[in-house]
Length: 281
Image (cartoon, rainbow, N blue to C red; front, side, top):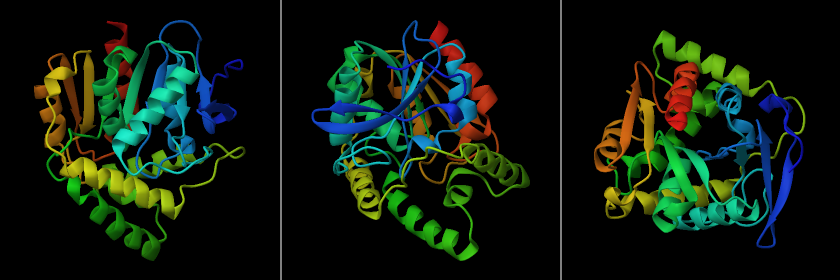
């Protein structure tokens, strides 16, 4: 891996062959210690991570963000199951030569992280789950409908869809949405392509399968787990975060006030502080 930069917006996109398929990734932060691998949300690419979150975590850890198969700068066809995405995540980590990592999964990425630790628990030393619940969780089956309805709303109002899906409609939520989108726009060059309609539909199929699955035995997740979400998540109802905390033996939970699905971005300073404290224990 190349030398690290100090700001995520300055990080260059690198590429790694994973079982013959080229994966795009970026990395910042010190190379010492256990790195953090981050798994992104529905329709999210490496350009869609909040720089404040990545930079904050990278103050103490090497952070790696990547585009899974068929997403953003990565080649191949996007899997239509969370299990398939988890297999690619495992292969990516191993292709980097990493024996054990911290994992941070947001939304769909949090579903992928759960599947990874069920498949290969020794790969993750600790995990952070944001804006997600367990398989078969309450209301997760409504995500495709929420996505399509708000996609239309986004087109009609010329507004980024994440304003509606990630944030509350209070003045505080609207202000947080504007600041979040401003931070995402800081990177001017070297951006990857947006998620294609075909890949978006594959991700929705994966979410639908995840939502309709039988609930797992969360007690099998043995590693320390930090669960975080907004109190008013319309994508993955916040009660699912409580179910993760109650079901995973060594888990803790933070719910952020007047925040939605993107609570970890709205309260990025608090989330980073809590995450670093959790990882340092």
